[in-house]
Length: 245
Image (cartoon, rainbow, N blue to C red; front, side, top):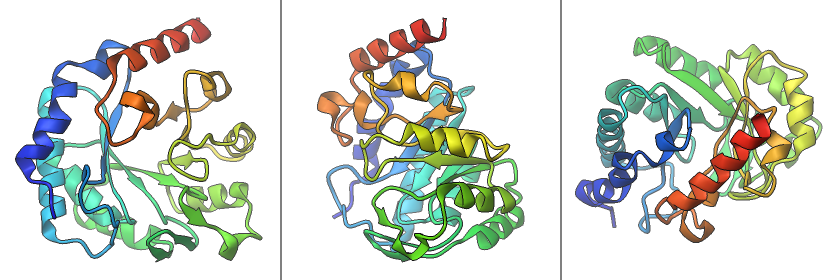
């Protein structure tokens, strides 16, 4: 069962119309392609309706936030589709998984896609769309590359022209290792982002990151599928401003 475009708009757009993120000092935002409450199987063989709906949502958000840097991700390593959506809707970046090396994700084996993805981006004349790449990503087994450290993975992603690296914990909402942030940031010249587990209680450990991707902590009840809780955003950003000043 697929969530209709009107339902997606009704859920996604009001929080941007209220300027929840911009109001409290967020400098960027991105849309992740997980249909709310429906079709949670994350199968990579999705139909064209996914790209169509994601483009409609992203274009609507861009219309509400014309100057905010915005990005998009479509799960199950649908990275080329994300580039197409970003180009069509005016997004600035995508989040890509499976960029370098192979890993076994919950939906199956994912292989490195850097070459194909970069060629596709160039073919689409979308080289202004930046590609931020997960390394040793969450919801995955990395036994295949257990002899390759996260620093070596970061170096490979930099060599393959990633625009930024994303470090996560083992699952959505699980804290990333601050030591990995230190080690990776010290080994590359790319921006390094934290992609999971940042909360009000631990944000001080990640202030050296180039950016933080925060989803579950900003949702009502801390559940990723719920609506944004403005009070959680306000409280979190208040602490960030205090720490930085």
